[in-house]
Amino acid sequence: MQGYIVSRILLMIPTLLGVAIITFILLRMVPGDVVQLKLAGDGGNVAAEVIQAERARLGLDKPLLAQFFDWIWGAVRFDFGLSMWTGRPIIQEVLIRLELSVQLTIMATLIATVLALPLGILAAVKRDTWIDYAVRIFSIAGLAIPSFWLGIVLILVLLIAFQYSPPLSFTPFFKDPVENLSQLIWPALAVGYRYSAVATRMTRSTLLEVMREDYVRTARAKGLRESLVVVRHALRNAFLPVVTVIGLEFAFLLGGLLVTEQVFNLNGIGKLMVEAVLRRDYTMTQALILLVASVFVLVNFLVDLLYVWLDPRVSYR
Image (cartoon, rainbow, N blue to C red):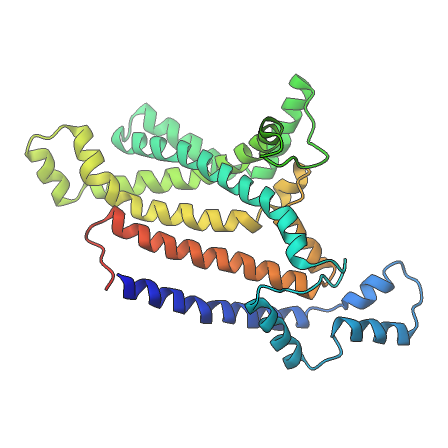
């Protein structure tokens, strides 16, 4: 097991390096120049000397290979440099938004898990009954309704019923927990509902498949109660693909909540990433993509380790 963990950690290095190389190349292929957008964005005339001087200050006059190695060396030391657009440290720009995005992602994941697991198990146990049909309608509606549309509906209902409007600024949890939760519970519900629909369908289908296995029939033949058969014998094995879905969705939500953040007036990582791409802010975009890729790699690693605990048949050697 220890050897597997070490090998997986070492495999993260070439994976993230590949992401860094592809990101660096693709960004340079996108039309546009951050210096021209920044200095001549209002349509005014800027002298060529001024543009060249700014490019030299940002290091864009160096060969691409030199730019890449400078960035990688800084990333290894967790020094991602300055934003080409704002001039502030990238770490600072990310950290002031990361708390919001991480908390919203965790809340949405918890809501989705609390909804999905009981409903998926109930639908599988009560297969082809009115309960199963009701859960199917609930989950299909969650897949069909975009989370941002549901967010807009929530805001309208809250505005009409309780005169609620999205906050103008984010309140950290440890500063005012009540105000913080009142701000994030609604976007977390909007995102978590759609997220739960995917996990509910997966839980139902995998549990139904496991319930047809021979060892489940044997447990029933021994006279065990149906609840023990489901919980002890079927549920843990059925959780493997469900855990995978939940883990991947968690990693995706960290940087993929742009529209929901716009609807609820939240300044998170997703909004920052889109702004960085539109402004051709190479250093900021590279850092954010590397951050999201690192979360995906880490979550996949933790999910693989969780397999061993859920299913004793899984062994890493």
